Image (tube, rainbow, N blue to C red; front, side, top):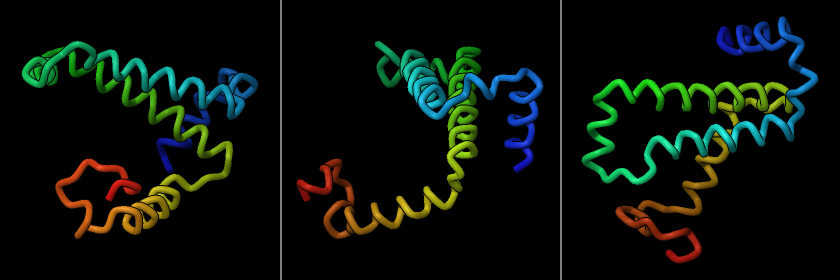
Length: 112
């Protein structure tokens, strides 16, 4: 909750609420996720491992933080409890992907 309070204070002090409509936060979330993907683009597993042991890991951390910031603001503005939403989705996924059918498989639930 402390992080959310700091995010809200930061946003409020800059009068950015006017720019943070749900559509805009969702767009920004998607754009930041794409920037995270760019950190890994064209790298094989060995190159990713080396990158994550180098200074470049900071870029990955920054992109993950940007994603988390927009996600937290979006959840706040839509009155969604992120932790509760995650737990609810996990329960849904437990039903879609029973251990006995999905363990070790990357198949979609409709293919199990």
